[in-house]
Length: 156
Image (cartoon, rainbow, N blue to C red; front, top):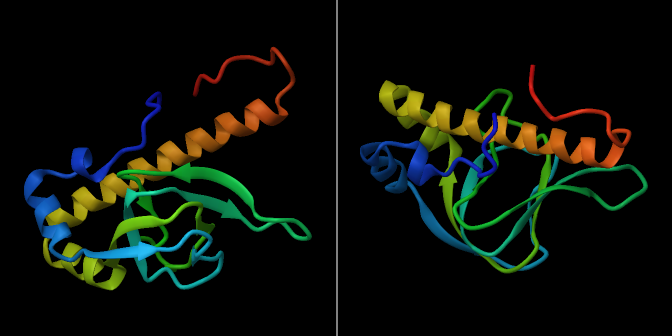
């Protein structure tokens, strides 16, 4: 993957599927410093950021959580809701006050089961988001830990 932008719902889902998904959304406000979820918790919802910033983080024993990525307008917050065992693999915290669309994961999964085209489109979108985030994490780790001049970031 060579893209530097996160796949967003408005580009990844066909218009009819976007409308159907958005019919399940509810607007929420999340205060600065609030935890959206923690590693190991039940992944029962997800969000699309409207305004503000959310940090995805990883628990590090004896230290503050390590920020893996910072998300903003249009970004999907939470991917673990789609794939069993529906447990958060990371944590997330509002860096600034956040307004977002919140979705009930079970309702979206049920919709995806009853409408296979919708299910395929949502699975593709979330998969693209995960692929993008893995590539971005790899790039950050190479920036931090790879020996200087160790080679390019090309994917075999």
